[in-house]
Image 1 (cartoon, rainbow, N blue to C red):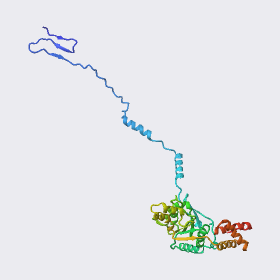
Image 2 (cartoon, rainbow, N blue to C red; image 1 turned 180 degrees about the vertical axis):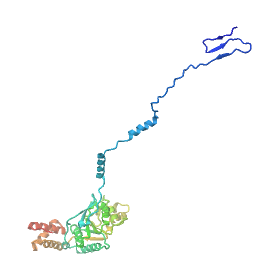
Image 3 (tube, helix red, strand yellow; image 1 turned 90 degrees about the vertical axis):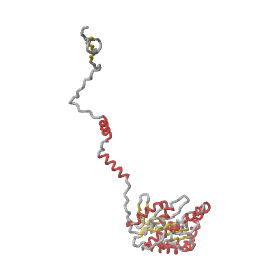
Image 4 (tube, one colour; image 1 turned 90 degrees about the horizontal axis):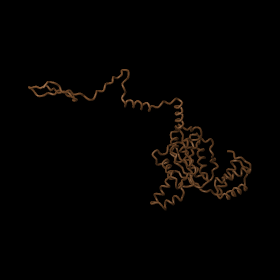
Length: 348
């Protein structure tokens, strides 16, 4: 057999040369059927690409940064904040007047240029309570201890007139101020006390016609301010109140507590404990006919009305009969009518 190579469609080549010295050897070469992908060369002019996460963060930061407002917008915002800010509280000028009216809406004391008062000499039939209130007010004006005063009793007998007249009589050096607070504003009494306690003056806080209804609970705040609270009443403040009710509450309220409460005694004590905060109780009662005529004659003489004698007495009694009462208020109303009919002006 001749030496040769058998080649076919196979990838292997077989040597057919006979050999006596060894076995038949097959020589072959393996070829990869998948051709290699040519490598791309990166252009040196292009910059390397940023990672995707960093690129997204940069875009998000740009979107979240708002543009800065201009100066006009900032000035309008500042002006709006100034309007919304609370008004600064100025210390009241207590030297501006001798009497003030408390206005809780603006937390201010409005000065009263002229106090509507009656002279002490014209208050008839109340001599005992007049002297007691004058003595208490004089002690307070001198810086001595004094009590809160409750003036209660018959209507029209000069309770509020006596408070204003006592203030005018004692206030010779204009260091004693009269401050009026309305019954509806009693809950703002602590704020009023705060304004007055640091002032170099002494104050009479006056509340006319003080009373409470069944559903009204503001009397509890008044109790704490007068006595029983942590701060207590300032040393330079005293509280004067007038009322037609001795215990500042309607009688049916107290009777209802006695009949419906689990412990009637404790319920009644809760209601009447407010009046106990007033150390000075001054009762006013209906005047007699002689006292009523004395009031009329005092007014007629004070304002120089040319009307005397039995005609004055007769008309004054007839006026009181039509009104159904005799009091200082009725006497003043008669004198006003008489002066108007006679053409006399009631100059103060």
